[in-house]
Image (tube, rainbow, N blue to C red; front, side):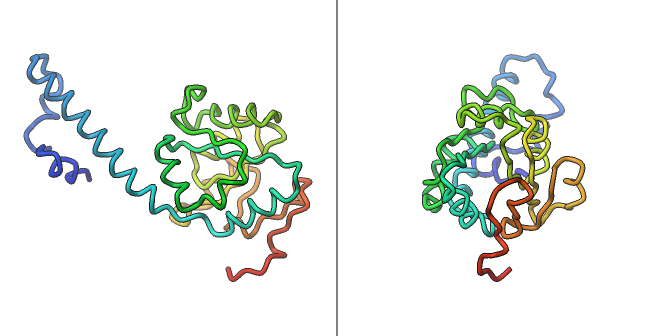
Length: 200
């Protein structure tokens, strides 16, 4: 429910606006445009505040660090988040972001279509100078997993705990409960997260 958007901006969703959405009256059109723009601005403000509170997936930092120690494995982030949101996420997670050579965001000019389209992963592979088939994608969303497969990448799903794991089976090459369960030898990488001391 988005009542909070209306309350914050002096708008009332119950005023019959939706039922009059086809009205061609100029005043009505201007009102609709104002409401839509206000909604988008309020949504982006709310997203911005949430970005600063994002918590890293369990084992993500440790896995990224382990992969970076190989030296011959270029790393990139391919996220649907806008660049401003990523900037805010980095504030608390710069220790992890330092290992990535590139960060491709959803509002990147070279990403014409968002996930589940493959554009963002194809762009990340291009910047890394690696063929998509030689890339491994880690995804916690179903749309992202579909995008990874569509790009021709090896796709490992790490489903958000709120989602059913079964939904990812047909759209990924492997499904693991957390980054701590990554076994790189299956993909020709000498990284086994189970060797790390963890409490999971």
